[in-house]
Image 1 (cartoon, rainbow, N blue to C red):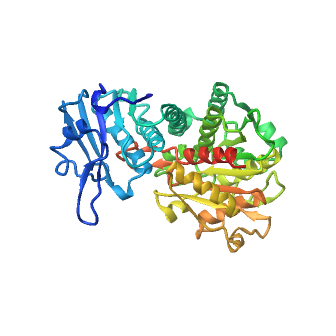
Image 2: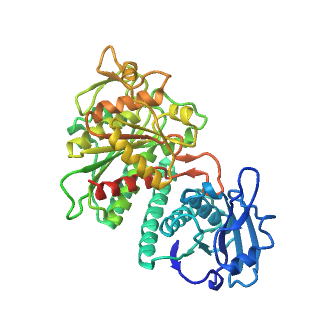
Image 3: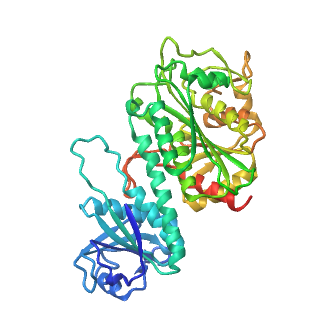
Length: 496
């Protein structure tokens, strides 16, 4: 999707559709509906429906054809809710909803006016990022798929042209990278094996100037990644250890940010096999790995002055005569021994070796992302990802990045009492801690391998896949955490 800025008067912009935001500044049960722009021509065009058809309710849309005094063919009024609650977070959703609503009408282009409220830079960023999210659909393999895409987006803004153009370009990179992740996650497992995932990472790295190395089973065994190999040994598909490096000229030796992603391209549960109902969704179990690949793409293009290493541990988790079994003991790269209680708790095993390897490569700060536990969905539902941290300072930095990115995550505890649940009688630790607090005990397991390195764990099991169609985003992969991780990396470059 091409994106560009216009500083013309909205009435003078020739477009298939002009989009403007309607807000309600009324208090409590009272309403005071208004158009959130000062342009008199657009206000006049909308005057007859403001307060009646267009009430300002969040995501409410009113489409006017051949609006008077405007060069646009249509005028779409979209509600942003109450003025006091309106911010760039809501604006992202409005832009996505505008894209999805207009492309369903076979329109190819539109122009959106930055509303009063958020500053101009934040508004441009929110519109571009939201529009890219809205433009993605997951029906890739439908033979009768309709070619419904927005090809051109114009943002009508006021402010410093150079600064706003920079904001637009950066937002485009982020939006494209988030959709790149969604494309990877959306692929079925027969078209997204560990080898194919590695090929995508290598191709992307070549395009944007990253160093990328891909290792197979021999290297995994050489590194003594027994936890990773324990999962991989059950599949006929070879595993892939993907290592992407961003080392910009002029960046200090430290910090080095390590991004570690779970790349289970299909998860049957292994010998502890999952129920058949819903297992097809387990193609998404590589969403954490895909997220890190997409984040590395964006970082390479945005060029922050900080070193970043992305590691993806990619394999299938399959039942076979070679697969690990409940009761087996695996020795992780760190030397810790692990009693396998449930082979379906495999994500933490591959991440354990990924985190250790990241530390070995010199990473001073760590973030991992994984569709790790169903328990986090029980705890937080589908609205928030789970976030864990072994260091309050790194959590505060990530929290600020998350807030700026407009993504919802909720911190869960890592108290020492939970470690008792993963103590083993025969090995150092077990790979499950029982039913209660399952997301926390999984995080406690990973904490053993992060050790004293400042570390964030993102459990995105409930948020990496949209279970229902929303006005602003299609059902399917969401690309959660991409924006937050990008902001986090940029913060390291700006505040060392």
